[in-house]
Each structure stands twice: as C-alpha cells, then as structure tokens.
Length: 337
Image (cartoon, rainbow, N blue to C red; front, side, top):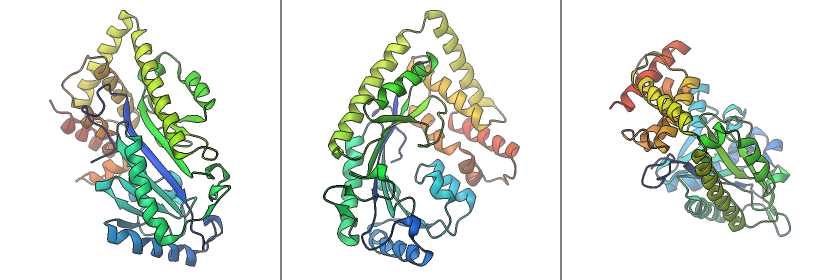
C-alpha cells in the first residue's frame, strides 16, 4: 500500500493521506542537540537491534547521496531537516506497513505512519503499536506532569503530531484559505504545505495538523482533526457550488487542456506539473474528467518529483532540461489513455 489514496477510500477526491508522528526520546541519552557522534551511533545501534528483526530496512543517511536523501523527503518518509543533517542519523523503513522511524532528528526517534485517505485512527493504532514495542525495549523519557519529554517544548505532552493532506482547489480559487487558516488556529490547528512546517502549498494541497501536544489526549487531538476535516470538506463543496457557470466552463477547458498536456508534453517542469495536477484533479472532482484514475494521478505527487525522476530514469539525467524531459515521459506513460 502507498500513502496516496484511491477512488474506493476517497470518493470525493479531497483527502489524500493521513499521518501520525510520535516524538520520543530515550532516558539514558541526552537530547540530540547535545549528543556526540559516538553516542548518536550507539543509539542507532540500539534501535537497529529492535527494528531490523521486525522487518525494517535500515538506511544510513550518513552514507547516502544528497539525491537519495531528497527522494526520501519526496516520499514523505523523512523531513527536509533530517535529510540535510550532519552526523550519525538513520531511517528505519517498513513500507508494507506504511511505517518509518527517523533516528536522531530533532528527537531521538520520530515514529511515523502514513495511511491513504482519511485514516487517522488506523495510522494512530499502527504508530502506537510500534511505539509500545520500542518503549519496552528502549525506555522512553516520560514525566507524570509533562508527558513525553521532547527537545522542543511545543512537543511536550503526547509528543504527537497528526495531520491530514487535503486537496482544496475551490477554497483556494475563491480566496478563502487565509480565513481558513485563521479559524483553524483558534482551535489549535495549523495549515502547512505538502512537506509540512516551512513549506508552501503546491497544487492546492495543504496539510492540516495540530499545534498543541500538551493538555490534550491523543484521542482529543484526533477528534479535533477529524471534525476540522469534515468541516473543510463541507466548505470545499459549498465553495465549489458558488462557482458561476461561466467560470465552470473555463475550469472544464483548463482541465481538459491539462490532460492533453500531461499526455503529450515533451518537457515538463515541477512547477508546471503541480499547476496541471490541480487543474486535472479539480476537473475530476467537478465531474469533467472520468477516464483517469485518482490513485494513479496522486501517485505522481511522489513519482514526478525531481529526485524521484532522476533516480528512476534509465537515461543519464544530468541537468534540469533532461530531468524535465524524463518527467514528461513518465507523465505520458502513466496517464496514457
């Protein structure tokens, strides 16, 4: 299974994926900011003894190229900060279970599960099952008053960040996203781009996540996020209904033109792909396009990214033009009618 969705689990085409990430630190190690390389490597070894027998693959980020590291960011397995980090740090990955564990990021462990569509409860159960197994073996730092101890005070408490990736073209088109962000902040939620904190929205894709970890239970956080997603889906539908007929004709034209470009272009930049992705996806949601699979379209949110295109190419991709040519080839083959 992949984190991108399919028509069966996401009939309205709005929710792309759900993620739960748990920040945890070990009692007998200082926080990563004070962790020397010897102890950082030792910590990775302790985690390896637990996870590798469970079917996890270890990826040593101290020994991979910048391009390979960028590809893991594009697949949403690691943060951009983790990919650029110096010193011993490793990713443990179990793709069939949609699980990943970053070791030595901002905290000792970042346990993450990404599930397709609106699956917060499933992602939470999967992540916490692994967290409990790791806690038994590694002894996580926990305080009765503060909750799980984390390097950044904003993660104290549950140490949990839950998020949902949403496609919201009508709210974007009608200029409502700033207002949406303000309203969500009043209930402890925030709006980010598709790569999380510090990233910008591309292709009308947004991550909605909790800002507060302390003073709430994990169940409280998940319910608040579930409720917000339900409201956003209603608002998106209402916003789409407000589009006047003449504008819908223009959107239909843009969607059909976008399909043509994706299926025939010889060169395609990342920026152009995101624009065309949004046009096609919105056209599908409005019922203008029926011959493209949503799961296939959403898979391109990973496959068509720069590092993934470069690594996946059978050709020698040395510059931006050759990468754009390879991306266009991928799009033509993936979306061939």
